[in-house]
Length: 258
Figure 1 (cartoon, rainbow, N blue to C red):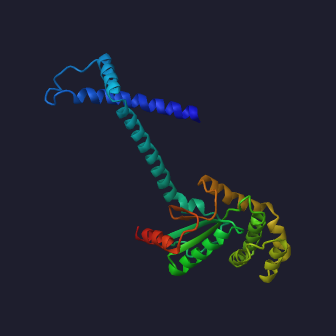
Figure 2: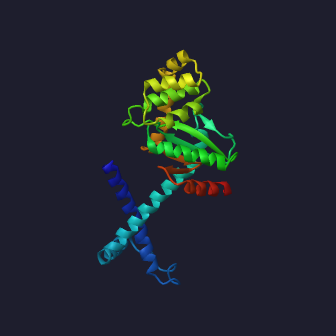
Figure 3: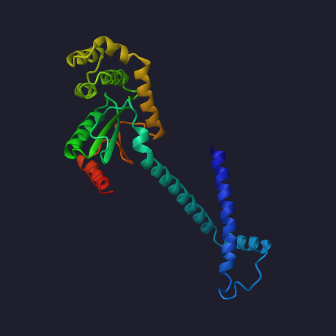
């Protein structure tokens, strides 16, 4: 990786030097006579740029730094543009539980962990946003169980098994309500309370099908470099961590105007 960056920087410097030599030579010529005078030779251009570097080496350094910053900004802008154009249709998989109209102006995709206390707070905020912007916001859930939380993955599998019986959000609410006490006994108890088919529930949460659902969500989060939870994508805007309700409202209001 370092070697590639070295070659890229070398190419940038070479390009800038050539451009700078031509530019420097031309601006030194009187405007009215520039077209009439014979062009400088390559050796003369090289000598001129060497003189410029000797007199003010920082000028060249600053120019290169600014060029690299502009290139990086352009890449980030392009990546964000592509993400905004494709995010909703590409990031929402068939297995992801949703709330709100499919054609809502704003889609909130949340990456969460049932054992994470901050995710529990984030869940309440998203719930309130759907109430505040009823019909204008859609909620999409993605599992992001963290390796440091022992019950996060079993809870995610149980939730998706409940989803296969049409009871995801009810099960989801119970998991967050008891997020600090999750264990195997609770997963079964919640299923019983929701009148789930226990045999199917137990088979589904141990199945490859449910495992692949969660793996797909994790891979999606990795592509976006999302490492912690909760994380939210509001159309094309990525918000990491829990923020105040007002912060999310401001983002939604701006998106609705757009």
